[in-house]
Image (tube, rainbow, N blue to C red):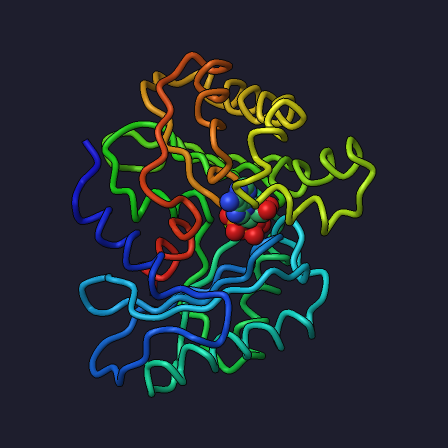
Length: 274
Ligand SMILES: Nc1ncnc2c1ncn2[C@@H]1O[C@H](COP(=O)(O)OP(=O)(O)OP(=O)(O)O)[C@@H](O)[C@H]1O
Ligand SMILES: [Mg+2]
């Protein structure tokens, strides 16, 4: 059902897009497609080769953008520049242009600010695409719903005959999961964030955050009510939480699948637009 090329791309992304300074190194010759994803939780820079296979990338947890709005302009530029430098060092090339993205529905002025961040970091912004459409570009599905549950928002794209016919986003994402954990356990937000992403604690946290998962399901159900949908493709970092697809499926009544590691689907899809 899931195509092998998609698996190849996501598995390459999992290997070459790294959080620290280390990563596979080797001089790159030829075309590069670069994407910058300014997320609420993670900012990602990823470079693909001419076959759209990820060859290098870097990401970091940072709160420079919230729900598509650049809240720390200089911090965002600094961060993109740092991540770009890491990727350049690995590939021994200069990155000159990149595509970036915004959650569907954000104001044009905010979308422009995203372009300005790239330019401030020394990258020509070749394209700005909405995040749900970017994810759909990589998944290449013919019909269904692409659901990107990120750090700040839940974004969705309804696809029919290979074309995105409806997009939406709403402010519920992984940050809300962490806030609920922080409140329930009386711990600081960053401790909750760490616990949530630690496999050893996820089973015990499931019941605490299940209501937020249900809320995501309700949001999706509301937005797709007028469309005939038989499959939801769940991506975004929050889709890494074990069991979330079952809750979305239960609430919406629609088969929900996670197509490989969901974290880098949107960043890679963005890069495909460069
Ligand atoms: N293993 C994991 N288990 C659960 N949640 C995870 C895991 N890894 C990452 N996350 C969560 O995924 C979220 C980040 O995902 P992603 O990078 O897709 O969002 P973003 O692009 O930064 O945000 P947005 O698109 O909403 O602006 C964070 O809330 C993070 O805590
Ligand atoms: Mg995102």
